[in-house]
Length: 147
Image (cartoon, rainbow, N blue to C red; front, top):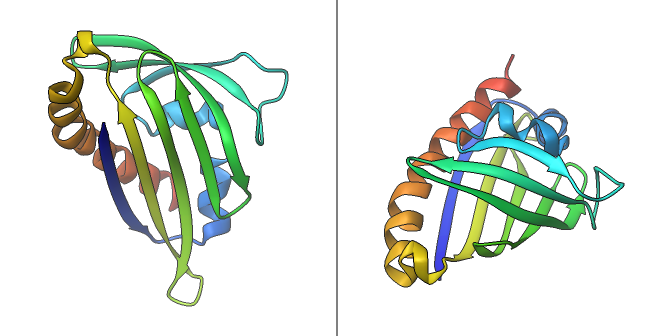
């Protein structure tokens, strides 16, 4: 199991950041490892929304099955991974500087299968590789929020 935590301070209000984060299908605009998102539930917003995310990290390609487990507009979006990689994660948005800026946190607890090197894959893939990719993703998110 690998716990990955990244965060960034964004020069936009939590409401503005939520406008960018809320449309799940647009996560491909700022997540460099997300290639495509396809909904498998009738709904596309809120708890219970289910989707497939085609993911590419270096030579590794997989389809991550996910379901939204927490949805608090302007504050939090939680997800569980139910595919090859399992676990859960959450985005949280906290107002800072009297609400004019946002502290955006991304935390995930992931379990990697044996064919992705299990615990070793979790350490290398999660603690080292994914953490760096997600930091880059957050910089991309921040850039979209200040346009």
